[in-house]
Image 1: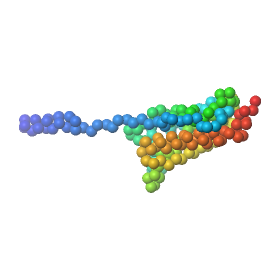
Image 2: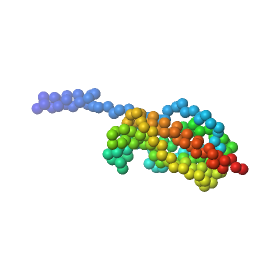
Image 3: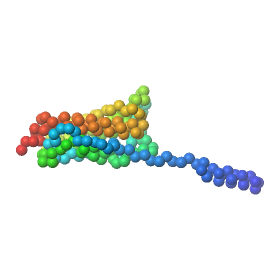
Image 4: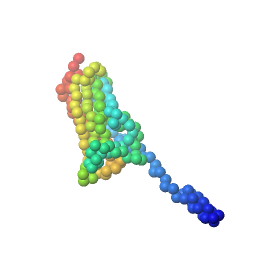
Length: 190
């Protein structure tokens, strides 16, 4: 009996010493650096701000698989380095030249920031929300819904981050083109 207890104790100690699996390290993603102001004249905007709906206010990196279209999954050991609204705000502030003396304010309400995976296993980064222009901080004067989709090269957290980086650049182009023209004239009126 003593021998059996000694053998079991030895096996227990051996299993506790180095045979237990280790937890992978947490990986933090952002949209990268190197964003440059677009080569265009400054927009007649006093400020650009980004906020988010509750579903994208946290740090989780989300995906949606076509086999479960109503379920948002999140990657276990991967997180955003900051809430998505902050990441988009930082990128847009570098991509969109603004005129601090402008009368209008641009706000973007981020409603989705996710990796969509289709039936064939291909992925698309989705950045969706609504752009709003307000004059001197009052109620919205102009509003536009945006839905930017960018194919990704890999269906994983790194692919999602790169796809959403490209989507933010496309959002900046869409925003600049939208503000130019009639909205620009409106914002420049005394």
